[in-house]
View (tube, rainbow over the protein chains, first blue to last red):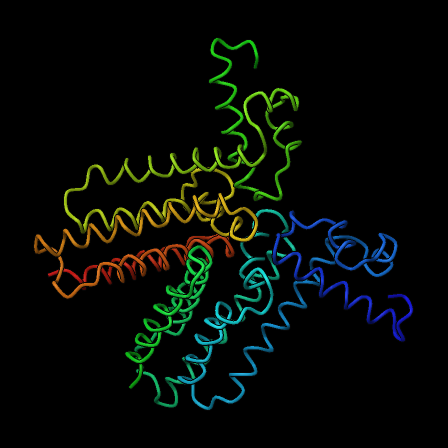
Length: 200
Length: 200
């Protein structure tokens, strides 16, 4: 790896990408520095050259995964015009985390939220921030939808956002436990029904 | 510990109880034999006297946690008469896993389902079985409710059961991520509304 043209940039990114997959598969506690060394074929010094600690790699790995998630959302939502379309796309992108996983081990934000809750406060904060951004985004889209007459005026943006995220996160667990997307498909159907009932 | 009157029974149970808490806090990969030795103040041989491997302890620890969960459900559901009362109690017991946790680290079935999904097939199977039993139990209660005229005849038992579990599991994640029971309280309210709409 040290022979690459831009070693500082490329090796660092390579370590982050490999570590992101390992953390996603085995959790923070289940992934050691030796696991990262094995996956990257680098020696301890080769890794510590770019990162101070496993903690620092874990935070960077989460940022990397988060970016990939945002890219998937954007690749769909950027083409939507109305609020309804955007809410439907959020549901469909979530469902795609089961049918077309971003990386081995399921959704990185979800896994970090659960894995890191009692083990790693900095990662918990990152996961919380990611989920909060989505919650806020949905609330804004519902508010805009109410303003432009797409949604009924008595719709509650914060309730709709919470309901969507609770159901989609719950469906991810159930789909993982059962190894199929049956619960996710049911959730997609129920949430779309729910959103349709909020429309004018 | 070796001096207790019934050492074989008591030491074994003591190891299981301590390990159950450790696995629940840190996951299967995050809890090593040395962690269990430290928590029980036993030497390696003292533990291997009762268990062949960490795997065996993990499965027994899950059984122990599962029993505690069932006890909490029974302590409430055994006093309910109607199907509606039983469904409401299931929702309230789930909510109590946030307000009055059974053990440190949250709900053991939920944690095992997520933690063990990609790491430990035997534990995944146990968690799946636990969730399937709850799903089946809810379905039967809805069917009985339809038969005795408590619920409308067009209610779909399997859909109601899935919806309840998806929402309650999702609410547990969101409550853990946010460190409060706001999302769980919303879920309790929405699920009770939903069940009330199914009533005759």
